[in-house]
Image 1 (tube, rainbow, N blue to C red):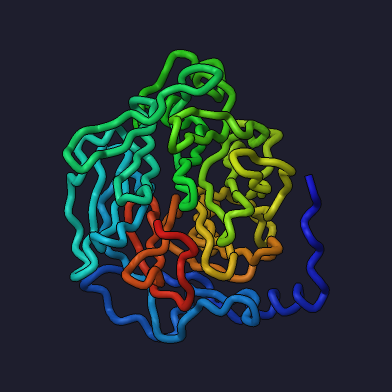
Image 2 (image 1 turned 90 degrees about the vertical axis):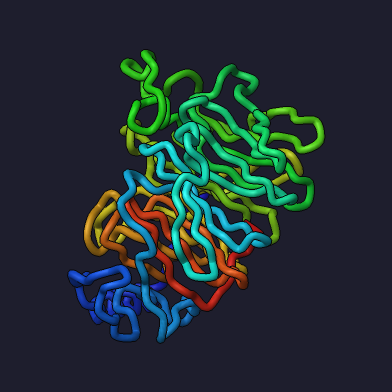
Length: 359
């Protein structure tokens, strides 16, 4: 793998000064009855103010909904102007409407313990289901089409997250297998008692939109999790959460060159250590400038939330949340609202950038 770029001494000193000037995460209230938050929001941090230009001086992090078991898989429907996401343990998919930011439960119930969600070029929901270990599409007439339930090596472990390529409609997705390791988020299989992988090697797959053929495109990531394309679709970023089960796994984001239906030249894009503490990255999205916004957690106060990485892999910004963040997406009519699925809650903050993709 290619080594990470070494930041200059000046950049390091600037980042240290910015963090030193930032107060520790305060015990703040969220939700409709919370007191107003003084601007600028202290939990939105420009580690590199020159490069992290998405921070607004007069916007605040808002909790839109809470009470879930483990929130995951947010996806924005541009035509319908709504957000959907999964509450995996409660086996449902929820919906939030843009006009008044209200949440409506049981959009899908049961959901098959679905994790990730996305939409295709025709606005149809695609879900990655833990319990059934498959990838499905919900048709306009109510039917459910199974797009894939096995790859070239056999039945999947438990598909996790995916993205649609807008040019050819191909669906790229990951299969780390977490839903096959526990009943809480899927269907624990006997093999999981002996192995961190339920059935087959964890891998990244591609479903061809025309033929429906499933191809394994990479399996060098320990546990491939969240993924996203760069704005020009020449790079595929993949989060590796293998550290949860493999001692030799590094906590990092990988970058692959996209060569048509294939991936090549894997390299380390960014690592997850901040101030000597290393967490794990889950869901990821790119903005229009090519910055990678990463859902982060499993460390604690001051770390958990969202970390933002520039196209060269340098960490330039941070959004601190009071919960572990599992996934995120850009949404709203102008795709300039960042929605964050964090453990039991859904958060939102307006930002001065837009998501690079339609979902």
